[in-house]
Length: 265
Image 1 (cartoon, one colour):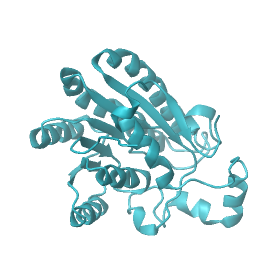
Image 2 (cartoon, rainbow, N blue to C red):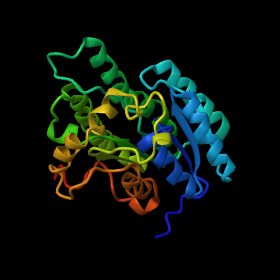
Image 3 (tube, one colour):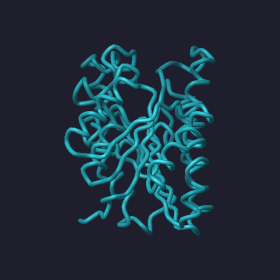
Image 4 (cartoon, rainbow, N blue to C red):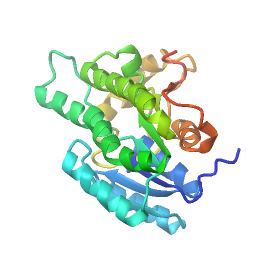
């Protein structure tokens, strides 16, 4: 299938590591000009250098999506350099497993800032130019935690549920301007290589989140909850994102699609 993405411009938040990195690589392979918006400067610069060495057009803007001023700076810089943004992928995410009654408020605040305010901030920043042009693709990376609820992920799941509701509402508001808004919900998705996760990633080898699933007994118990009997990898998410970023999906909007081995149906 010809996706027709050559020459488009995309912004991918959280694009330096794991799922975001795989999406960036997939878009670049289709000839898209990609801007990574991420807080991890070291990892992002490494990814950009690799992509440029392979002949792709990739760049990086340091951005904390939870900070509106930084998102506004990102928007100004991207529009000044590229003139337009065709595709926005909201992939930045953050959480730490913990029971609701045990988690410090500071963790909740960070989860809300990144996972909910992040997509709100970036969409508010980039949607006006999409509306003005009468074209745009907004793809929010949700989570099955936002569809079914997840143990030790109460506030994170609430944020992702909020992203789902936000996306449905925006699909209704922006559809008349030929701007589509869809959500891709991964399940447990682990990096295939350690270098795919930067030092600030949830899945960095030293992170608490990563340590949990290094335990093979724990991982085996989790995987049994998936009908396909395996966890996901970042590459599993890419084909659907590419489809939703292309004009092959021009009649798809407001949809919530899980790529999770049947975990949420």
